[in-house]
Length: 107
Length: 173
Image (cartoon, rainbow over all chains, first blue to last red; front, top):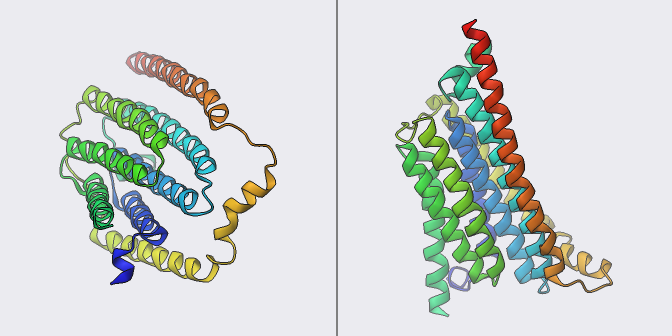
């Protein structure tokens, strides 16, 4: 019971792991490419939680972790925007965003 | 002490619930709302980790900017009510197995390696940097980066739209 009620680094890491697994599952099972982009973003948020946890609990190096996380978030948003722009173009060309249909069409 | 536990577990289930909402929401606009919720809840979690700047930064950059961008895109292509489509059940089972094995591998790695190496990553960073640099000095150039990102996104969008128009015209000819 002590492990459950004494909130520490392990709890945040478990949350981060579960979030990452959910994001990974979303990438693997979703047919809609917009949802895939969102799932990748979930994975990024889990990485940020991981970094902040280490930053908070390891020798108070939160400033380093903050700086890294800011960069990670900016890169994540950039890749999401670029992915969305590409999806928009795909939609204009095909009128749908279904990954399997697009793959079939290419074949 | 008890309030910390309640705060953490509330956010824990809220974040995981929102994450499942993003993947399994029956309509697209519900997935978008879940994403916005996830960003807000994870921001509250950052507050619990004493990372106020990150919470605000994430809320502005992702919660407002990215979510709004996706909303505008969905409205433009009229896919706000797009239904949930998943791969075949066989693929879902295999994917779940893969994800589960990833989780097990992560836990094993954590158990074996955590005390030896991972724990000292931030020590290494601190030991190597001899100068004390103000956090604001790191952050200031990032505002320029954000500005550049927005400008790049707009240019890319205009460029791709023009390409689409040219392609459409060629197809009509």
